[in-house]
Length: 186
Ligand SMILES: [Zn+2]
Image (cartoon, rainbow, N blue to C red; front, side, top):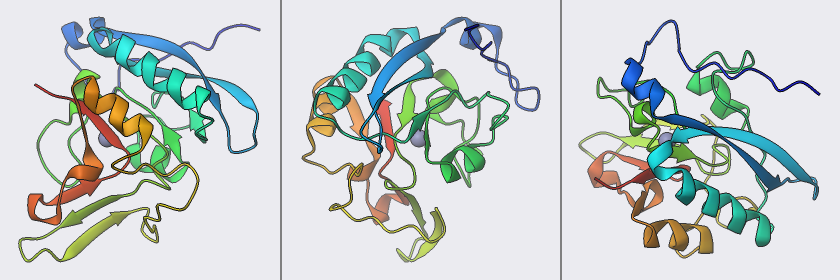
């Protein structure tokens, strides 16, 4: 079977060439919710490739289910994070702003990745700690649901030991909690 070409450049949000040159497409095997092993691809910065490989290796080993792993530049998503998240897709590089802000996300340099966005939702809060935005809109964070990350989960513990922050540790006071999100410190 011919390998699908991975698009790196988003025509509507163009990344500088040096950013594109620093990305690598990782092929990863993962354990699906159907109990089968699947192959996917995730685009991340070369600097963190080994860390991300370690994540997927452990996830497979402990049979942590992952829904799908498709680069967000795929025709299916066309760089639209909302569409990718709604499809419960796990992904890395995306030259884009932090949702609801005008700051570049760590996904823009491939130094962040998201896992199972449906189980591991993204929530924003206003200064009164009131929830103002949630994706998925009807999402519920429930630690008992398979595929959900928690602060003491082996995968979260692993990534922290490798120098990553987990967005599930963020607080309403900081404006957002992002259970799906890992980003390399620094
Ligand atoms: Zn993220």
